[in-house]
Structure formats: C-alpha cells, structure tokens
Length: 166
Image 1 (cartoon, rainbow, N blue to C red):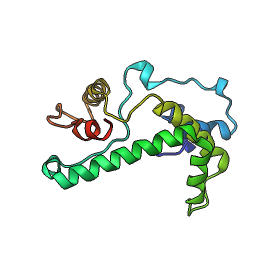
Image 2 (image 1 turned 135 degrees about the vertical axis):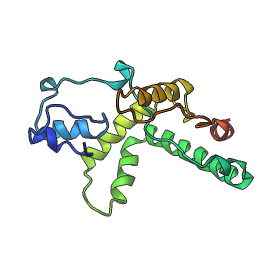
Image 3 (image 1 turned 60 degrees about the horizontal axis):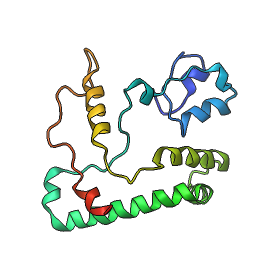
Image 4 (image 1 turned 90 degrees about the vertical axis):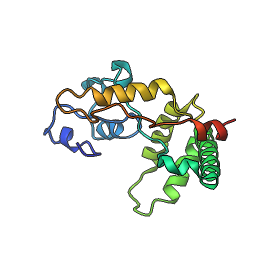
C-alpha cells in the first residue's frame, strides 16, 4: 500500500493501514464518517512497530566528533519536538511556510501536529527497549514471509540519547 488512501476511497481495498496523524484524516476529509470505519490500533493489538529513529553505522560510534555531532543533533531535535508539542499552530505554520509544493493545507498541518503531539507527549526521545523488542518480535513474526529472519545483534544503543538528554 502506498502512502495515500486511494485504494479505500476507490473501493479497491476493504482495509488499509493509516497513521492517526495523517492518512486517517485523509479518509475523514474524503467524506467517510468515523462511525463507518472499524479501526484497529497496532498498539492495542501488540504489534506496533517503531517508525522513526536515528540510524548510523556501528563503526561511526567510535568517532568522537561524530558522536558529539549526533548528541547535539538529538538534543536540538528533541528541543524542537517539545517546542512543537507546546506550539502546534506555530509548528504547522513553519511547515506551511516551507512547503515548496504548495500542496499542504493549514487545516491538515495543524491537525497533524496536534496528533503528533499526542504521540510524542511524555517522551524524552530515547529508544524504549520494550518498544524495540516488540518491533523485533513483530518483524520476525511474519509467518512464511517475515520482514527480518533473525534477531539483530548490536542493533541499538542509547549511548547518544543518554548523553543528549541528561
């Protein structure tokens, strides 16, 4: 499935995957009422997977300058997300001001920022080990066609976020 909801709207699919901060609202904006939908939250079903993260090659973590830069990046990113949580309308305006395509709308961006704020609220930005382990279990559990075929070794560290968020 692509990143849009056309298969559902065009009745090519009876079920699609959406994010609460984006595609779900595309369905609603297209005229389908929430009460017409049956929704399943991956979190409630125990199969939510991590989406965004900071990914680096392991050997780069041996480079002190690189690590220092990553610590600064994470610290600034989390400061920005916390500001956006507290100022969702201003955050949406920044996105709109920088939308070269002109495709974004104020309504969508403000609603999306409000939904993202619900997801980031209470988080300091560090990887939660239980979330990581659930993601690995879910990706391994794909029956005859798993996303990954063996448990990763050395695939995460909190070294950067520990330094950035103290």
